[in-house]
Length: 221
Image 1 (cartoon, rainbow, N blue to C red):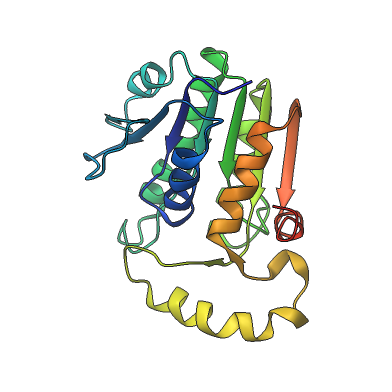
Image 2 (image 1 turned 120 degrees about the vertical axis):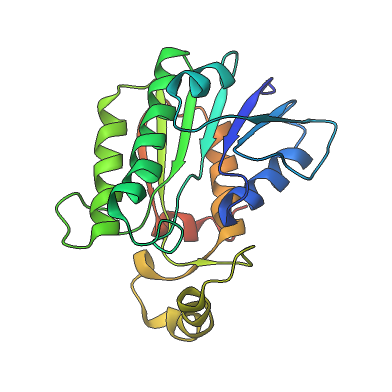
């Protein structure tokens, strides 16, 4: 059975961009609604772009009405919010939580969201603690089906330049064989393909897909 209407948040990011490409070329998905702040400079017969104010929970609710599957790869960086932790939280936590609430209220069948390897609400690392808090909050919503993906360092070409990440992307793959699977770098394209796989599966309920599980799909997809 084809998915009539899928909604994607975060299409301008690394994983989101890969995910959008896969959704558009996969005949399993008939209509792809991409939710953004600014207009996409991209057209496709299957694509519809909805521009909203992400701080408005009602607009998030309205844009996913009638949807079947919702993907979220929403996330920011410290540089984008000038190091302001409250602003960081507003993007990563508040927006993601509101998407989750909308999925519950609009009776969405599946919500698939990107978190991070090492996510832990008790972590002393702000980023990992925040990701852990987000996961806890989403699991408390009692959604029909939620799949949380925990990739490690993402490999791929971003639209914006990140010096630290660029250096890590160059060096870590050289030593990845010696690293535990949950912290090995992973291609953003593989994360996207794994998300597509889970969106088509018959799985119901809560599931967390670790970096190790994502890497195991490398030869299966």
